[in-house]
Image (cartoon, rainbow, N blue to C red):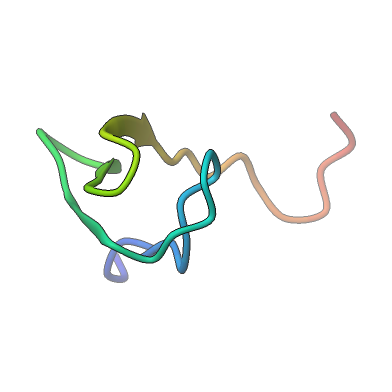
Length: 47
């Protein structure tokens, strides 16, 4: 298993001030005080 993906910016405000947040895939943006989770869906999959 590879290391988890790290987002480059917040999907809400675009800032780069992020830190890991509670559990796998969770991130917290210190700029807009929002938490979000990343989930890998697959490569080349028609959704």
